[in-house]
Length: 253
Image (cartoon, rainbow, N blue to C red; front, side, top):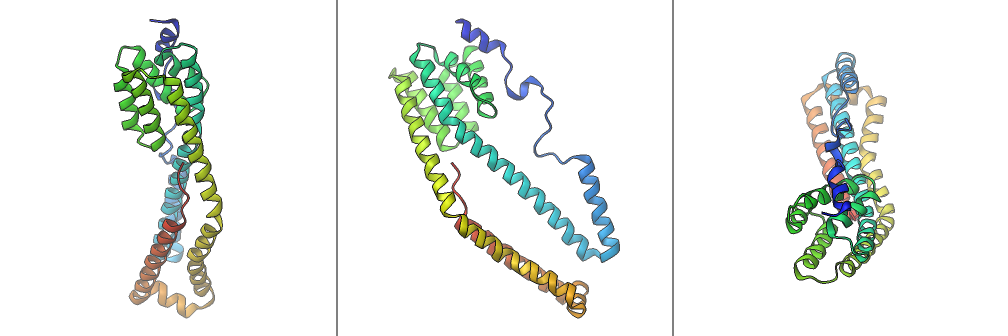
């Protein structure tokens, strides 16, 4: 076993290192307690309908924050992948084996892709077949870029072709896809802004109506027909927002 492979074996990988970082999906205790207190106070001061609306808004805000965080992580990983392939091709050209090349590429990257490549290098250095390691990577991360990179490395390992050349080709393809996705996001920015305005306008109008007209507020907030109107309106607005999002959403890299 080479010295680079021994270094790969010795280095801990990703979450296994025990950094103690909190889960991105967890809700901090103080924030949850404050939210629950806010819902209770709203129920006492403005009634159960307002409390339910507040709870639904808080839940939607939390879900949107988690979705944005996941989208940023996907974008960062997709941006790192061509860089990782460049580093991998450089190591392979210098005569390094694939486990050592994976470890060297991981050293030049941060999370999340650096941790993934380090884990792959560790598994391969411990004697697991490279094809199985790469197949597992593709199973865990089924995006198109990972599949392309894994396929190129597997073919180079099994068939014996020049792996650096295949990796260079995949890196160039991924960069072209990233550029195309960025162009689509830029072209769709105005349409997405219009969709946000159209989705928020009914909600803003309803709030103004409730604040300015006590009779309308009493009907909407204290009677079953008013609740039905609110439910139908919210459902239609949500359906319209979802459809506009589908039409104008940016492509993921």
